[in-house]
Image 1 (cartoon, rainbow, N blue to C red):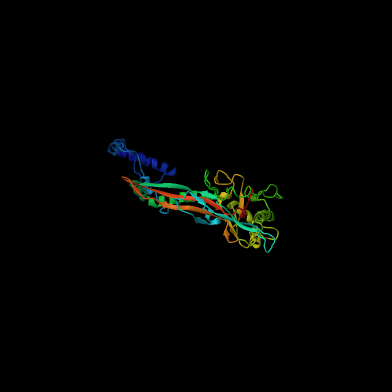
Image 2 (spheres, rainbow, N blue to C red):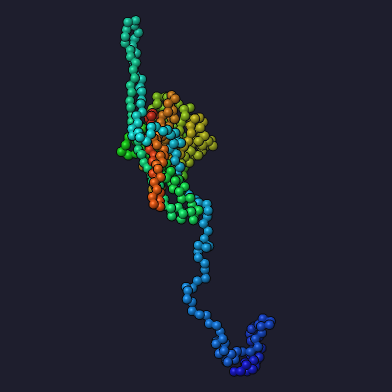
Length: 365
């Protein structure tokens, strides 16, 4: 088919094509079919796409479209609360392995008076309870290339390692304040052998003895307050009346158990209000170590949620405190060929309970 024949054929078909809805942009109207000769030339004139010598790709490296947030977020841990519950003191140095805490008891007896009588006696009895210290350490290590690679991500690697070392030491120190160190005369606030046995909560109207069950407060405000009253009564009995309602008291429990203190009675008064009214010098502290032992709380109490009431001092004497002999000792930095090491050391006496009668607890709430 020649070009002229192709034009004639297209003109003949144009009306039918228009009837079928075929149209063209103005200025780009079709005037002919493609002649056979043009088809051959068309294929020959077309610049064919050559085969690729590289892998097919239409993107840029992912790193060019990746943003690193300059704000570095840190994983959070449960707070160290042991020192806040009963204070913290330094005793001795890291050279000391044993500490003696002298206890003096006044003794004596009276006798009927007589001008020449020589009866009656006053004396002193002393005891020397002991505690053993435990030193523990952590080592910081970092290399030159490691530091520079972290710097590419805007992370101050040395600072982060310093904070990690301090966190590890403080976490273990806090743990010893609650549970001491096994195998030594080093005890904690929750397992000192001189502490009295824990009380059992009263049975509640809803059944059982717990304050909270499956995330719901099941005990009434009055029932919760009565349990705490029982703990205080135990303190009064143990101390022979030296501890009174206006004494400086600490009520410690797990954060979960503390929620139960918001329970409100029929007079729109919650447990916090009742406690503050009847014990004007009481303060409240929470620590996860008072919670029940579980997979999510490996430092908890196996017997159940515990509540502990402590009289901070009796007759002007501290009833107990957390104690350490070395808080953090930084040893020299040792330089390697292209790396650095440094040891940090701390030491603990655990919790020194001077007056066990000033401590009472209840477990299973």
